[in-house]
Length: 542
Image 1 (cartoon, rainbow, N blue to C red):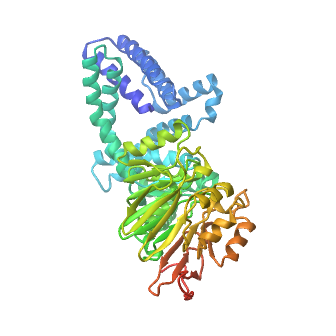
Image 2 (image 1 turned 135 degrees about the horizontal axis):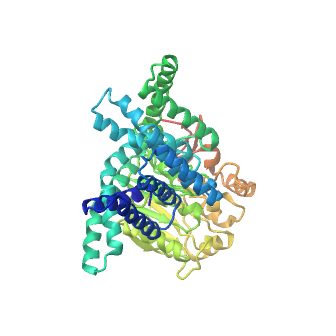
Image 3 (image 1 turned 120 degrees about the horizontal axis):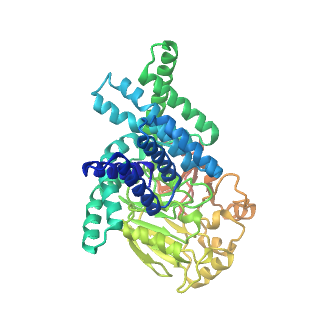
């Protein structure tokens, strides 16, 4: 709930009482009663408390016959609330709510006046309202989420007409005395609520709209300066011609950078990686997210710790839909990025769950249209021309690292690959005794290159390339010298995301195995184990 919902309900109560011919005092008392009930119904969140206090002061001024001056009412409401509860000063939600209201009172009309030079007044005012709120709230938002939603204003503009009917019908449904009436009101509320949800999902699905921004106080100050420049360019105060000129030049630079960055992140992103890639590892920090592709079919093994990093990687590799998602286990560094692919995966294969949180995550995938399948030793399937098989965990394994789903992927013209999740030394040794370990070309090294490895398993796999998903300057010391020495002794070429960025592997035209490093000026080349290594440079780009 936001202050806008509070204002909608109070305004509706006031208007209904006015239509019934109630006196001014009775309208105020009735609106107070509705306001108190609504706050109790939705719980007193900071934005609702602020809106309720402001509405109370405004209605009191109305009852006394004095016009309510918006900014004075807001100032009094904020002051009273801070005196009653000083800890609200630490609430970002309260600050955002007060800032948005102040922006609407102070900036909306000047911005609308400036926009009128290019459009009708009604449209100018409709655009100015969400623009003023975003300009003022943006610097506060980047303190917790270092991104600027470029479609935020447009999304608010399109969704806003549905807010009032959804709020009123929903509130009435909560207090309806008869089940048939409650169901009917709920159905009425669903229509505008579904529209708001559709706008949110549609705008969020546009990869280019979420502009990365510096975080912390520096990012907030920089965005505040951009906001001031936008206001000057739109309003164009006649007394400050030089400042308007500087702001116009600054905005031209900012717009160029934004458009260029959006192009790199979307249209040009897939052009920066080799088009022939078959296995790829995303740079998602201290976590795992590994892709494999066969024809047009794509699989992802684990999602890394954060949805933003995974979304960037999927955009970079030009991936919009996953035919298969494997969640090897449910540690945050392997499933934390799941929100980026919920609704985009057809089949989710997973290891044993441990508690309600794991089950809720799977339920979210299933509700979004994915089919779920728990993997044990021998579980298999196809992806394009490749066939995958789970080498573990064994049935009824206890959840955790040692119950990671280990995957073997093979196919004609495809580099045979084994992905080991976070298996430790003992579970690796158990895998080696449980299944026939294949000789592979690529191994996804277990547990980010920790020292907890079974050397005999890696000797049996004898990989030509070892991929390590690891974060820069991590506090675990990954990858360890022991692990790196083990791979070097096997003659394997190592790719690690902390130094190399994203990684890609493919079988080249000569039958050799090529490894591309995003940050390297010259990539490494490994060979198919079936023949001597042909050597070829693979640059950091096409």
